[in-house]
Image (cartoon, rainbow, N blue to C red):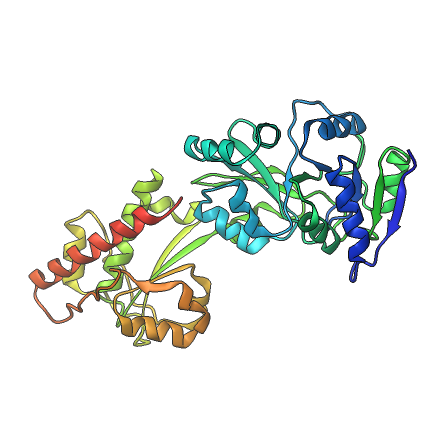
Length: 373
């Protein structure tokens, strides 16, 4: 076999040549391609092709390869239920130099068994998990969108040797051992992708790479924001209750939420900061084991709106103010109590506050129940 080398402009690659490479992969061939990290060997997820890949790389056959996808939305095809932290990480890091290992529960595994041929399923999923990467390199992305079958792309190197970061390094190890090499020039990062596993409580780095642990934690942090008028009654109560019930769902102490990457905040549309929370709100929360007495009001800002992933408003006016600050927030700002507005108890007696808190608590519990952690 003589390896065919096809040079491509990384900025304006020849689609016809990439289509030819995709056809070779679908036919069971092995094709070296550039990614932003290192060069990889693209291989169809099919047993005979994977056996050839194992032999080429001198790799132990009990190890599974990472699935590569050309569009990040395709992750739902392989992982039916994606948790909040994984969703945030996908939003911020894909396409890019990050491999994510997803754990699937038994019901999702059953769905995947029914969705794929047995051969594909058994070659992709190991111990109820799957590793997936969505590269940003344009050549790799186009190729993965063009192939008709699932594709894995392990690094282009014999096991124990350094991964290739340009075409010449690929040829030094695999000349006449692979069908095709797409030469897209040197790789952007010249180091392997970071590999992480995401659980409910943490982002676990399995392999160091382009991203640091601190960067991963920042990119996967999920922020919730509650908005009312002055941020002295309704939204502080909602914030405190949400923290309590989110911690219960995660099985942790409330004080550990921030460290686990879940931030719960509140703000008011009047723009006044530093006001104390109303005594009646403190009392009703204290009766539920929630301490909000140290709360001080925060003014709603464009930056705060843009930073948060979920925004729950007490009333429609609050939604309007949020969207006025940032029109893009229309897709993430909703009423806390669905189609109902939560009345303002300011200036009223304790019984009115108690009724307001009961409505907030009911809505918060429902929203917590809707979250996929």
